[in-house]
Amino acid sequence: MTRPGTREIRRGQPVPQLLFRKREERGGKRVQVQALSLPLYMLVYTFKSYLMGIGRKQAANLFSVLSECVIHVLSVYLMVFMLGGRGARAATPVKLMILLLGAVGYVILSGRGKSFREKCLLLPLGFLHPENQEMSGSAPDMEGVMTVAQASQRFCTKNGLDEKTANSLMLCIEEMGAMIIRHGFHDGKKHSIDIRILIRPDKLILRIRDDCQPFDPVECYEMIKDKDSDDKTGMQIILAMSEDIQYMSSVGTNNLMITLGRTRGSTRNSAGGIRHEVRQSLRQAPL
Image 1 (cartoon, rainbow, N blue to C red):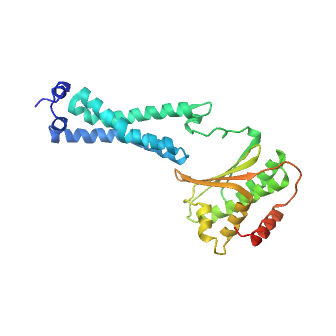
Image 2: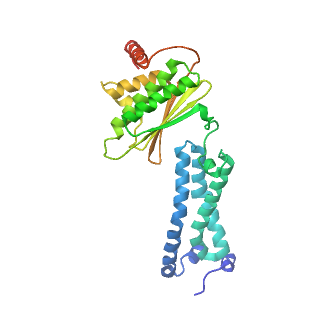
Image 3: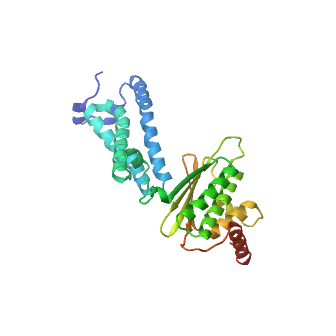
């Protein structure tokens, strides 16, 4: 039996009959093609997951539709048209290659940064800041958290922020770091808390990332707000001082972004004073 070709399809022979000829012979080749396609599939799946993880949901959904519907159908039709029934086996890797080329094009057009590596992060506009308005630190334990918190206070003061704002930031780092350690550092593995501070004209942005088990502090607070615990007190303090809190779990890491308001001037208040001030307001109007 000869292999089906393009002429047989053009004569009107049903495609299903072409696809199922020599089933035993073609089964092994189909498995080989699928195995060779696995690395490409993993790259495509990782890219879609990354888009979803960084909040580009529309792009991720569009990528999924193209992957499972449009490009898939076009690839099968094109390869069967060109190679006959055997072309159906090649449709999967062709589809994946088209998707990867599309992903590269999307990164080049949408990514920001000087190098392709920076573009691959697909960072939002305004993410990168001048070095003197950005601070990063890493803490493997509570002592490290305290060290970074104190450094953040000096960093804010150096950049002209008032002491109350600097102390509020320091307090947020201490309270959030303590919660992460209580919830994620008990599995016997080595962990690290990465802390990044960005100064913007009207606000401070605190980004905290850790490699522990998933932990959304706001969701946790909603479950324990009627109980007495250290987590409840810590989250009340952070919620009272912050303008916005966003949490996202992506690729095995917890990502937390806390936005605090900022002012310029000489307003003075120690971290202990801020903590006392917040607790007093909470007694009057509980969150």
